[in-house]
Image (cartoon, rainbow, N blue to C red; front, top):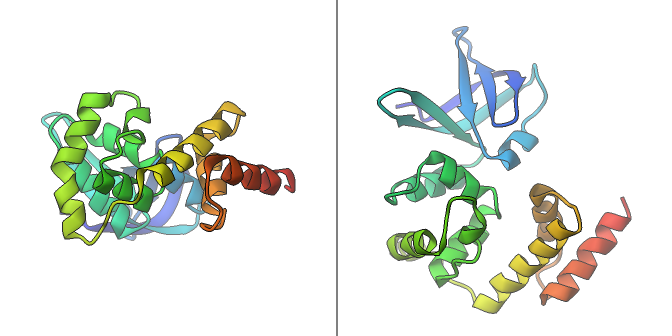
Length: 194
């Protein structure tokens, strides 16, 4: 299959990018919003780790900046009832490590934020992937830490920031600052200095 694709960005759209390879073929590659926002502008060179998703009526290519994102995507689509769009939705709610830790600790609150993933589906993801996370050395964190991060993320979204802006801002807050309220205050300070 296609492990990665490298070439010139011909088009950046809302849900995908088109990358022209040296052979002159343009590949349509679907990616999470976070990946698309980090890609360089049209005419620049980019490299994405890819997964070719085969259906009866389509061959869709999904691309990621980091191999760890691709691995998590492939784990998610291995769960029955989770397709590539649902997996992209999960990857779009938080950084890859946070999602892995949430699954490892059994915290379904991140997963239920994705449109189309309810409590039962989130529990199914945790049930099927928890051991795989432990096998890769990912251990769960205390649930309060994840809840604090989730609460701060929700508050920022309520204040009008996009999920991507909120995630990126929270990622810049030092880990020593604990508690949803303290983390939120720190983010608002940072965002206010822009």
